[in-house]
Image (cartoon, rainbow, N blue to C red; front, side, top):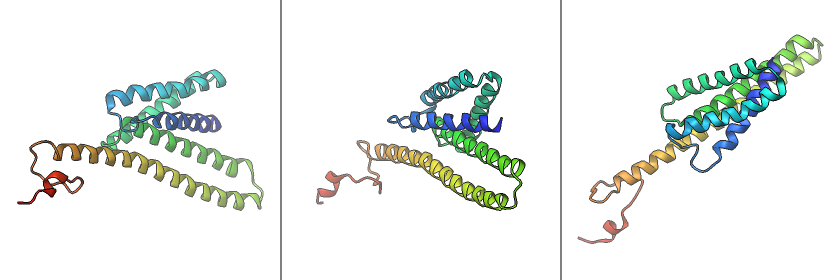
Length: 178
Protein backbone atom coordinates (compact mmCIF):
# COMPACT_ATOMS: atom_id res chain seq x y z
CA UNK A 1 0.00 0.00 0.00
CA UNK A 2 2.87 2.43 0.73
CA UNK A 3 4.40 1.68 -2.65
CA UNK A 4 1.05 2.35 -4.33
CA UNK A 5 0.63 5.63 -2.43
CA UNK A 6 4.16 6.73 -3.35
CA UNK A 7 3.53 6.00 -7.03
CA UNK A 8 0.11 7.65 -6.96
CA UNK A 9 1.30 10.86 -5.29
CA UNK A 10 4.43 10.95 -7.43
CA UNK A 11 2.43 10.67 -10.66
CA UNK A 12 -0.06 13.24 -9.41
CA UNK A 13 2.80 15.61 -8.57
CA UNK A 14 4.09 15.12 -12.12
CA UNK A 15 0.68 15.84 -13.67
CA UNK A 16 0.17 18.90 -11.45
CA UNK A 17 3.66 20.20 -12.22
CA UNK A 18 3.10 19.89 -15.97
CA UNK A 19 -0.32 21.51 -15.63
CA UNK A 20 1.07 24.41 -13.63
CA UNK A 21 3.60 25.18 -16.37
CA UNK A 22 0.94 26.56 -18.68
CA UNK A 23 1.07 30.35 -18.86
CA UNK A 24 -0.63 32.14 -15.95
CA UNK A 25 -2.03 28.94 -14.43
CA UNK A 26 0.05 29.08 -11.26
CA UNK A 27 -1.28 32.61 -10.66
CA UNK A 28 -4.89 31.84 -11.60
CA UNK A 29 -7.68 32.89 -9.29
CA UNK A 30 -9.79 30.29 -7.49
CA UNK A 31 -12.64 30.34 -10.01
CA UNK A 32 -10.23 29.03 -12.68
CA UNK A 33 -7.68 27.25 -10.51
CA UNK A 34 -10.08 24.98 -8.65
CA UNK A 35 -11.76 23.44 -11.73
CA UNK A 36 -8.38 23.17 -13.45
CA UNK A 37 -7.00 21.47 -10.33
CA UNK A 38 -9.90 19.01 -10.32
CA UNK A 39 -9.18 18.17 -13.97
CA UNK A 40 -5.51 17.61 -13.12
CA UNK A 41 -6.55 15.44 -10.18
CA UNK A 42 -8.80 13.38 -12.45
CA UNK A 43 -6.00 13.04 -15.03
CA UNK A 44 -3.72 11.76 -12.29
CA UNK A 45 -6.27 9.44 -10.68
CA UNK A 46 -7.81 7.80 -13.75
CA UNK A 47 -4.68 5.87 -14.85
CA UNK A 48 -4.11 4.72 -11.27
CA UNK A 49 -7.65 3.33 -11.06
CA UNK A 50 -7.29 1.52 -14.39
CA UNK A 51 -3.85 0.08 -13.65
CA UNK A 52 -4.20 -0.84 -9.98
CA UNK A 53 -7.83 -1.99 -9.80
CA UNK A 54 -7.94 -0.44 -6.31
CA UNK A 55 -10.61 2.15 -7.00
CA UNK A 56 -11.48 2.96 -3.39
CA UNK A 57 -7.83 3.39 -2.39
CA UNK A 58 -7.17 5.74 -5.33
CA UNK A 59 -10.28 7.80 -4.58
CA UNK A 60 -9.21 8.05 -0.94
CA UNK A 61 -5.71 9.16 -1.97
CA UNK A 62 -7.21 11.78 -4.31
CA UNK A 63 -9.45 13.01 -1.48
CA UNK A 64 -6.35 13.24 0.72
CA UNK A 65 -4.72 15.53 -1.84
CA UNK A 66 -7.80 17.77 -1.90
CA UNK A 67 -7.95 17.98 1.91
CA UNK A 68 -4.24 18.73 2.24
CA UNK A 69 -4.43 21.31 -0.59
CA UNK A 70 -7.38 22.95 1.17
CA UNK A 71 -5.45 23.08 4.46
CA UNK A 72 -2.43 24.57 2.69
CA UNK A 73 -4.66 27.09 0.91
CA UNK A 74 -6.22 28.12 4.22
CA UNK A 75 -2.80 28.47 5.84
CA UNK A 76 -1.30 30.35 2.87
CA UNK A 77 -4.20 32.53 1.80
CA UNK A 78 -2.25 34.35 -0.91
CA UNK A 79 -1.32 31.18 -2.77
CA UNK A 80 -3.37 30.10 -5.74
CA UNK A 81 -5.26 26.82 -5.68
CA UNK A 82 -2.88 25.26 -8.21
CA UNK A 83 0.10 26.32 -6.08
CA UNK A 84 -1.48 24.76 -3.00
CA UNK A 85 -2.37 21.58 -4.90
CA UNK A 86 1.13 21.34 -6.32
CA UNK A 87 2.68 21.75 -2.87
CA UNK A 88 0.24 19.19 -1.42
CA UNK A 89 1.02 16.64 -4.13
CA UNK A 90 4.79 17.08 -3.78
CA UNK A 91 4.60 16.93 0.03
CA UNK A 92 2.45 13.80 0.03
CA UNK A 93 4.68 12.15 -2.59
CA UNK A 94 7.75 12.90 -0.49
CA UNK A 95 6.15 11.59 2.70
CA UNK A 96 4.84 8.44 1.04
CA UNK A 97 8.24 7.74 -0.49
CA UNK A 98 10.03 8.27 2.83
CA UNK A 99 7.59 5.96 4.60
CA UNK A 100 8.05 3.34 1.91
CA UNK A 101 11.84 3.62 2.00
CA UNK A 102 11.79 3.52 5.80
CA UNK A 103 9.63 0.41 5.80
CA UNK A 104 12.08 -1.33 3.49
CA UNK A 105 15.02 -0.22 5.60
CA UNK A 106 13.71 -1.13 9.04
CA UNK A 107 11.20 -3.92 8.40
CA UNK A 108 12.55 -5.96 5.50
CA UNK A 109 16.33 -5.80 5.78
CA UNK A 110 18.16 -6.42 9.04
CA UNK A 111 21.76 -6.83 7.99
CA UNK A 112 24.32 -5.05 10.23
CA UNK A 113 25.97 -3.46 7.18
CA UNK A 114 22.78 -2.61 5.32
CA UNK A 115 21.03 -0.90 8.24
CA UNK A 116 23.53 1.94 8.92
CA UNK A 117 24.19 2.53 5.22
CA UNK A 118 20.49 2.61 4.42
CA UNK A 119 19.82 4.88 7.39
CA UNK A 120 22.43 7.32 6.11
CA UNK A 121 20.83 7.19 2.66
CA UNK A 122 17.41 7.82 4.20
CA UNK A 123 18.75 10.89 6.04
CA UNK A 124 20.22 12.21 2.79
CA UNK A 125 16.90 11.59 1.04
CA UNK A 126 15.10 13.57 3.74
CA UNK A 127 17.48 16.47 3.10
CA UNK A 128 17.01 16.27 -0.68
CA UNK A 129 13.22 16.09 -0.43
CA UNK A 130 13.23 19.01 2.01
CA UNK A 131 15.08 21.05 -0.59
CA UNK A 132 12.53 20.11 -3.24
CA UNK A 133 9.69 21.18 -0.94
CA UNK A 134 11.49 24.44 -0.26
CA UNK A 135 11.83 25.07 -3.99
CA UNK A 136 8.17 24.24 -4.56
CA UNK A 137 7.14 26.62 -1.78
CA UNK A 138 9.38 29.34 -3.18
CA UNK A 139 7.88 28.90 -6.66
CA UNK A 140 4.37 29.33 -5.29
CA UNK A 141 5.41 32.33 -3.19
CA UNK A 142 7.24 33.94 -6.12
CA UNK A 143 4.11 33.75 -8.27
CA UNK A 144 2.21 35.53 -5.48
CA UNK A 145 4.90 38.22 -5.26
CA UNK A 146 4.82 38.73 -9.03
CA UNK A 147 1.04 39.08 -8.99
CA UNK A 148 1.17 41.52 -6.05
CA UNK A 149 3.85 43.61 -7.74
CA UNK A 150 1.80 43.74 -10.95
CA UNK A 151 -1.36 44.77 -9.08
CA UNK A 152 0.46 47.45 -7.10
CA UNK A 153 2.13 48.89 -10.18
CA UNK A 154 -1.16 49.19 -12.07
CA UNK A 155 -3.03 50.71 -9.12
CA UNK A 156 -0.33 53.17 -8.12
CA UNK A 157 0.34 54.44 -11.63
CA UNK A 158 -3.26 54.90 -12.70
CA UNK A 159 -4.14 58.17 -14.43
CA UNK A 160 -4.49 60.99 -11.95
CA UNK A 161 -2.49 59.21 -9.28
CA UNK A 162 0.02 61.45 -7.50
CA UNK A 163 1.56 58.64 -5.49
CA UNK A 164 5.19 57.78 -6.16
CA UNK A 165 5.66 54.05 -6.10
CA UNK A 166 9.23 52.75 -5.70
CA UNK A 167 8.38 49.80 -7.93
CA UNK A 168 7.49 51.94 -10.91
CA UNK A 169 8.48 55.33 -12.22
CA UNK A 170 6.52 57.74 -14.31
CA UNK A 171 9.12 58.96 -16.77
CA UNK A 172 7.04 61.82 -18.14
CA UNK A 173 6.66 63.37 -14.68
CA UNK A 174 10.37 62.95 -13.94
CA UNK A 175 11.47 64.53 -17.22
CA UNK A 176 9.53 67.77 -16.62
CA UNK A 177 11.24 70.61 -14.85
CA UNK A 178 9.29 73.00 -12.62
